[in-house]
Length: 124
Image (cartoon, rainbow, N blue to C red; front, side):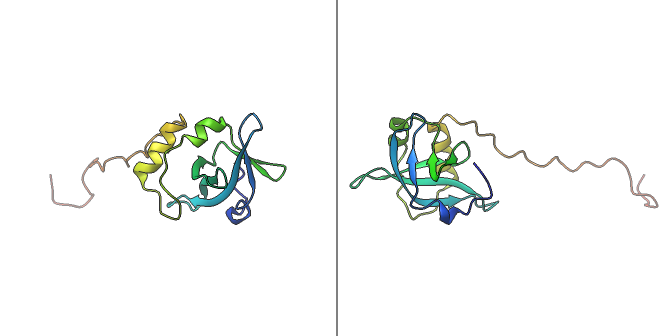
């Protein structure tokens, strides 16, 4: 998705699946804790429906609406975590798996290695 879009401008926009079927309206946008970039959108799926989380990374803003590259049925079957709360890393992982998206955990930093002795030290 375009990273220069203000997430507040997504709220209220219509959301459509990859076949052009209307899914609902963007209700909330969730930001990545580490980067602050928009990561998930909660889509209100109907008047009495619930909010379904969709990933913003493969989605795009097209002609003023959010185009989600998944079928409407898959979106509506997404895990329901409720809105207005923080998504835990475990919940995000469930969502990534639901959408079949590749999630690679962050690589740990390389271990500190002692490649030699500090010059001028008495250690041998």
